Image (cartoon, rainbow over all chains, first blue to last red; front, top):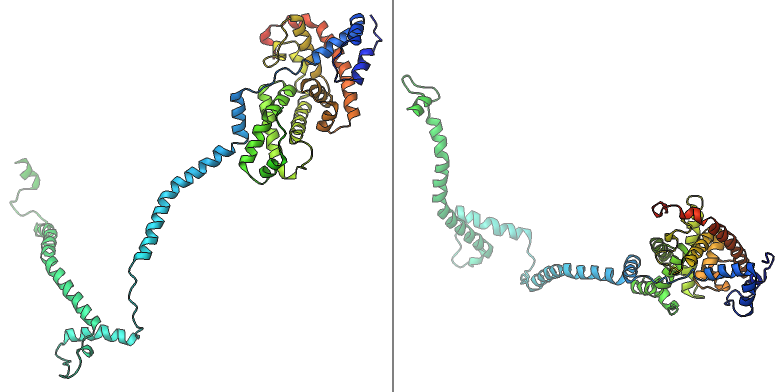
Length: 202
Length: 197
């Protein structure tokens, strides 16, 4: 045994990446210190082992660390899925706006003319005989187009009301009938009249 | 060994390209996980180290200098993380608790068939676990990961001479500790396996 021998230690320090062999191995066989150190060195070089990551573990790690492609794809799909109704609704709105018939452009008219058009027919409706157009006057000075429209609306309203008046009256009468019956019912029992309880028992 | 990651991919990943980030992880995960496992010896802890390493590196991609290998940044970050963990745990869990237990080598380590070799390897593992954090990292990077002294110097950010000194002292210390552990082996073997951590 040679406890002071550090030959193998020096050899390792000088060439740590080399495998002990040849003369050093022969020396280590004879030197107890170097043999033990060689055994430790051999053991140290076996520390590595196979350290391959299992496929399932690897996939889980990648998914946790950088799931870029999958997670990026999901919002896109979701966005496309949600955007279909939105796009359809937007297309409908745009189509309606574009295809809606544009109102005919009128020449600007003054407020006085507007009131004149509105009030004139009303006055005529109350007193149609008041303003009799002169024989030679144009009809347009007496009744304008707007007034004619208003008269037309009045006719429509009158016709609708005429149709609804009968049913509405019947409905109102039906609604009022229970109240009228309750109002007729005496609040106090008349002499000789049986009570409600007596009537029910009979 | 996978091909070196192109810095162009790193640049795209730094610009926010999720696909490039994914490619970076795909290209480097195997080696990084192997390094983490060899340093930590536990699969679940290797997972944590790998995840935290990528979190840190991917968050600082834009500040990386495009010199050397991208894998070097990963290895350096992972090793520093493990060294930090060793320092934090040093007072909490003495590593000698795991001495010579089957769990000291299993499940990932290819255990020697012969009992004597198994015991010796377990003793070496335990002895390595008693080293100071940085020499311990140097030993594991050198022996388990197969890094050169120059590579270890880059990873641990220390001069090459310092790495060689750490390795020299570590060999001496490991030999003494391992032999001492092997001498006390009967007492350890007397403990039932259920009591071992």
